[in-house]
Image 1 (cartoon, helix red, strand yellow):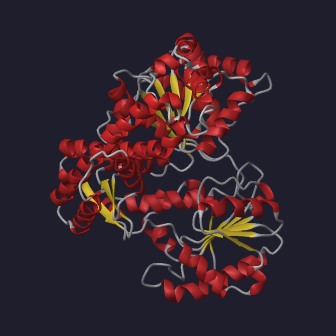
Image 2 (image 1 turned 90 degrees about the vertical axis):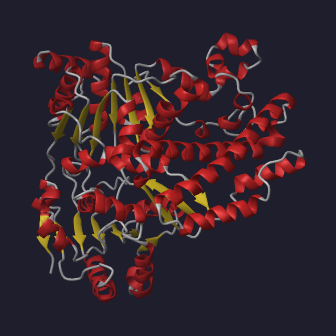
Image 3 (image 1 turned 30 degrees about the vertical axis):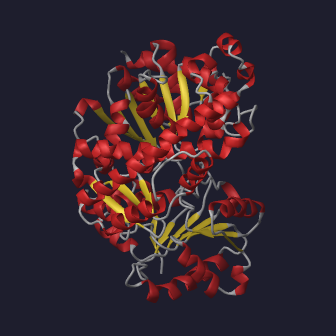
Length: 584
């Protein structure tokens, strides 16, 4: 295929669908041509590092559109969260693209019951979706509601559309669960899968497939036991004692074989409540007692979800061996992870997808990403990298760094007072501007509350949970010189223009080695630990300058940055290295 022909197609599609006045950003057209050409040449995986301002979402839409119109290829676009999902939906609407988009059932409300669609009448009655998606069949069995059911309408369009938007979580469920359970692929493999915020995929896969053994009897089991008692149904004798024993044995288990034994015990317990869930669904269907059984139906769904995770992990162990297991216990539960993360991602994502485009503004080191994402066995022609340089002017946006006060575990107590003093000075310097402080953890938030002077504290907006964070951001954006302060301000925030003119990194975002999974991955994968902190740091830096002409000053006060610069500077982006300035 001639490159100039693809270029012409990109221009034609963009003018037709994005408007006659549409203009490609610097490097954007070239990127589209490369991506489309690689797909047409059956390149399995493309990894693209595309900085803020490069127009990733528009690039994704152009590639998917051109591949469909001129080559009859179908695509999925995957996103990491509902916020990004809504941004894409807004873009589809803005440009009149009649493409499909679908969220999980729990994000839709059943108009008939007022509960989530997951526990709506059609779900409880186990009506096949194939019937509900056929208007005539749905009406014939009494479901006239489908004509105005948002979930059904979104689902129908998502199935038939040549380009469909989903979250990673829903895609993983569809590609790994639904085909096995339904006996057919509702969302089969497509020619092309575009993955936005692809640096989050590994964590999402870990969360999706990490089973958890609770240390006390979980609420959903208590609820199902209540139903069983009312209806004189036998379940697990002395369930509280059984759960207590499984939890205790899991916590003290050291050998992988012992962990597997407890997983198998709990999987058998859960299977009892999965069977009970089926009984509840059948009885609810027969009696039409949706309202009365709503709580039990929800509990049954949670039992099924938990059981699936244990079933999946036990099957993966059969394939990879017990050595892949690592457990992390806290006061509430024991989480069981697969340390061979590349195999995990390959098994549940890459092996279930067609050609892929993995794109992010902070992809990090390509070699590390390749290893961690299960792509190490890819042939040269099956794996291509695309690195788009930033076109922003950073002359007014230095990154000041200090090498004096390290926030490592052994030195943080001595360093904290000095860093807090630096924070006070920086805040005074930017007294008429808004800024953020990335604290690294909530412990550092408490230190700031206790030791900063009153005049600085008056500008601070703190939060202690995700709900509080949303309100805190709202207050911050409405202010003139407030400072947003917390440990979760590294990504997903668009603070363009005067919304943020300075940012302080109080502690480098190293993953905690108290987490057994982190510790195991550090030992197993060379360079991962360093690459991970650099990628997170780059995410934090990216909150500031959001468009060409925007500006903001970054301060990295954790002296541990000296080790990154000395030993791992190659992991930093060229843009970040060029902006570094020593801070006294």
